[in-house]
Image 1 (tube, one colour):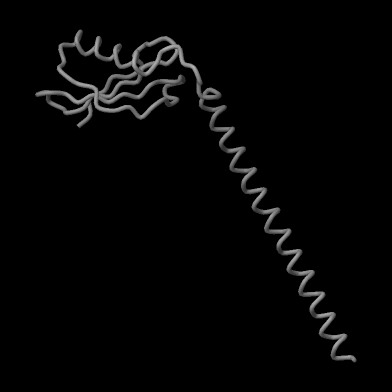
Image 2 (cartoon, rainbow, N blue to C red; image 1 turned 180 degrees about the horizontal axis):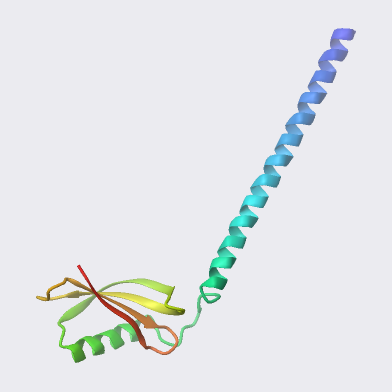
Length: 126
């Protein structure tokens, strides 16, 4: 009888410990995800708030603006790729990459404001 009681108590303790550890792991994983969400929200606040869902300047219009600037500079280049919208230099911009033809460096990077179409950055890349 004592052996059965001892085993029963041991099982109850084991179950209690397992439940407690399971609850603790849920608490820790919840706090980790909350911390991660807070970090993401802080990054958005630092980076000017939420990403514009309907920007004034579309990506296609930003590409046109870059082509106009390339023509004014006398540079022969074609659109290569876009890494999308990003927060740079205190504002949301379209990041565009153009490949040059016969120039000293093969790539030109543009950051064009999604709000007003201003060229925020023009940079040669190799």
